Image (cartoon, rainbow, N blue to C red; front, side):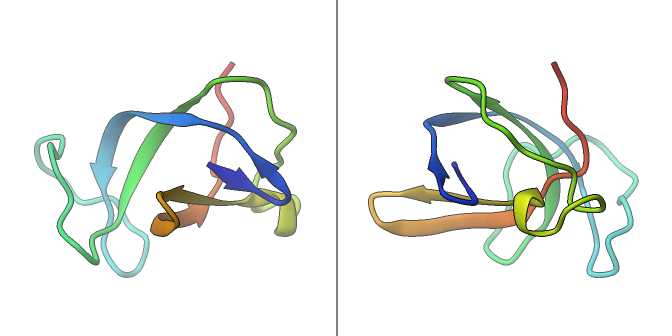
Length: 83
């Protein structure tokens, strides 16, 4: 996961729920996979502690990008920080 200038190994812990184009949660069962172009609320587990902020509090520190092998897999914003 990339956040600001930090590069930290991360694991996608769970797909919490899907969201639509307006950012509203979609009712239904928890998704097992996402199709290309899909959006979801996810929970990431980082290998070490990283200084981040909620997107609503500080936009530059509230963005995250998931990359693997030089390819961008996902990009999003931080909505909650869990201990």
